[in-house]
Length: 110
Image (cartoon, rainbow, N blue to C red; front, side):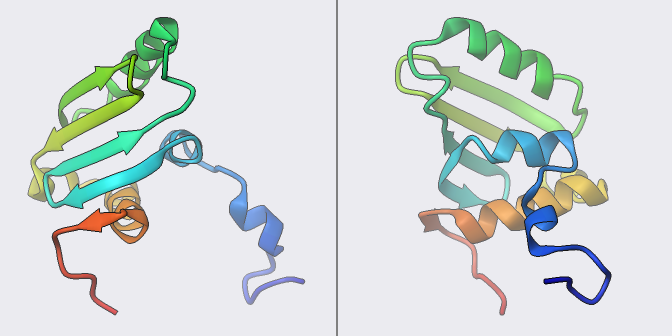
């Protein structure tokens, strides 16, 4: 079934950007503006994957500090929310994360 702009529902689920692709493989545990905790099963016990994630996230200039633990699969990202939101793609990613977080300390506007 096509939506109003002509794309099928399945197409909408296909990652289109690097952040989209990355987010498909993580569980969002916690969100508050400026601080996000993710868990990635692929990262657990895989130090080489930790290096790949670092190389992937490092070029994103709006990212602040990233801490990863390959034993637990935990990824903690701290950032300046105001600065990050200047990038439209990253602002969209932040909204997605906010909606998927198991714990969210920011109000979700409906």
